[in-house]
Length: 307
Image 1 (cartoon, helix red, strand yellow):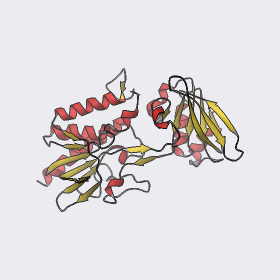
Image 2: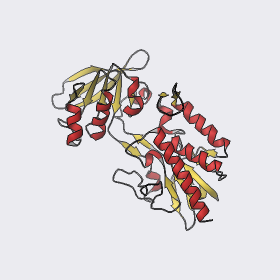
Image 3: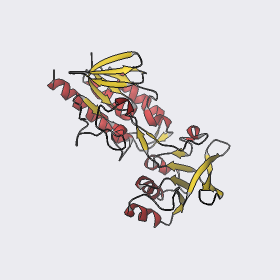
Image 4: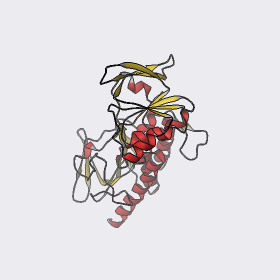
């Protein structure tokens, strides 16, 4: 019987592991398919406090893992298939292996939706991203594009005008789905050029494998053209990695785990959710780490109260 099992890594998972490790709870971390989460697909991280020169995303995750294991966290590279609530514990199933724990911290993050075009995975971090707040500052005085038509796309496009020389807002319809105020703010910005009724059909790269342009097609006229740019920000939503819970916890209409307001508790006693799997607003490394800290402290208190 484990005291704490943490499902997933990234900033939320590793921070939970650091705090529960320091509390002598010997947490077990089930790292899944992508240890380190989304930051392992990021090049330089400039906005995480304490690193004024910036740090590569994978290196930051490795340092967090080293810190967690230093304090007694154990890591197994297993993918969780399902979780079952027992009367006083949880059963976690990974293939034909079963783990049992008094508490569970879910820190599995969310995966950005992409277009599914050829070569897409290789371009992540090389001119393809899903976070303007994270990567916008790398693209000063060059043209970029945002794909999408909702509030997130308009917000990202508006934010990017602080850095980019031009922002193409590519949307497959002839009007935005965003709220009126967000749409007006974007369309009134002289740096933003909407590309209506259009879809990106191909990413074009330079000799170094970096983004240099995209091909778009107008779905009404079938007219094709190329847009020269240095980065594409995909803003068509995220998919929270919570499917393995199979209805065990309450989620919103988009699948994000619902936290009890003001904490990381869920509707299931002893199960806590931290990071992007429960956060569709901020989705930052630092907010995920904060959530991981809260989940660890709340799990520790839960264990003490139910000892």
